[in-house]
Image (cartoon, rainbow, N blue to C red):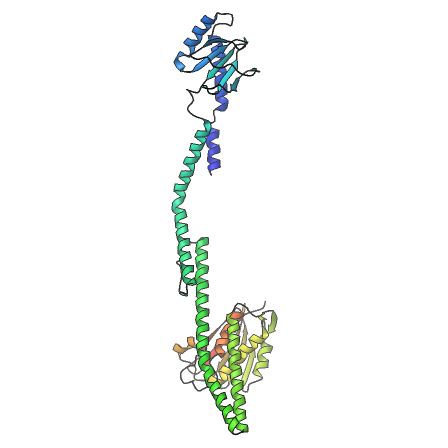
Amino acid sequence: MVVVVSGIVFTIFDRGGFDERVFDVTAHLTWKALPPATASNEEQADALTALVREFDMQVTLFDANREVIAATSIPLPPPRRKIRGDGWHRHKGIRGFGPVWVTRFPDGRLFAVDLRQRRDGHPIVGLIILLACVSIGIGLSAYPFVRKLTGRLERLQGGVEKLGAGDLSARVEVEGKDEVARLATSFNDASSKIERLVNSNRQLLANASHELRTPLARVRMGVELLKSKPDPKRQEALENDIAELDQLIDEILLMSRLDTNSAPQLNENIDVLALAAEECSRYEGCELSGDVCEVRGNSKLLRRAIRNLLDNAHKHGEPPVALNIKALDFDVCIQISDSGDGIAEDHRDHVFEPFYRAPGRQNVQGYGLGLALVRQIAETHGGRVHLTQNGPTKSTVELVLPRLS
């Protein structure tokens, strides 16, 4: 902007060519006004003095041999080099004089002028003043916008520092719709994910510690009893406890892996109906129906999700259990229904939380990790899972996954 404005101003007010023509005309008029070269020096001096008396400048008239003919006050130094051609020529002066401008008359005489006293200033001074004014104007105009931007960045920095200090609830206000606003939105999203992940890990660690204590206590007691008296039934119970403990640890590790950024490979084309048929064959009284469709994902994880849903339906519901697959426009909906008592509305949002058990289900075998794993597997595949209630005594879990086009 400074360059453009400067160029426009200097284009409009550039008087170099005009001044040059004016100087040429002035030199010609001066030559016409002075006596001819054949006149005496006194006559030429008087005419020169009368001509420049009102202009308050130092001028000197030289003959063709660069000898002084007439001068106002102190004669200017003669040019140090020969004047060639018409027009004005700039020559450095001596001490006490500024640059001297010299022109040659048609009769060979030289006319020297020192404009030092008439000059308002060097052109570079005007350029510097112009650029300084433009810069100050730009700075004053831009300051409110820049200060507003830096203020938002400072508030964003404060939020980052709070988050780094351990305040996981730190958020920043999203102001505007520019890049800084998008950065603030990204920061808030990242903070929410970090807070959710840390809280989930804390809850998982606390609940896992509690749940592990019971099977470990049974294992310890079984080992002590086997030491005193071997018993096949106790040995079988000990093996069941170890298997139960191994299953719990496996589910905890799987949840932990799904919580991290090391996402599993989702590069398989999976026939959902075939996969569901294999899992339904493991249970009695399980009815399968639906459309043939494919999804992109991890077959082991999807198998685990369908198995957990069927386990949950058989443990907490009543037969018959129905599994229906619907091919939607862009999604695949896996519905698993049972004929049990259902879940109260105020508890439906909690069934997908780790280690949660609905009231009255505390004695059912399991640790409350099945549906939590289903939700994580669904989110890993870009899908979702939710629970609906079809009538007073029938609940349905819907697992929705992106359909492979």
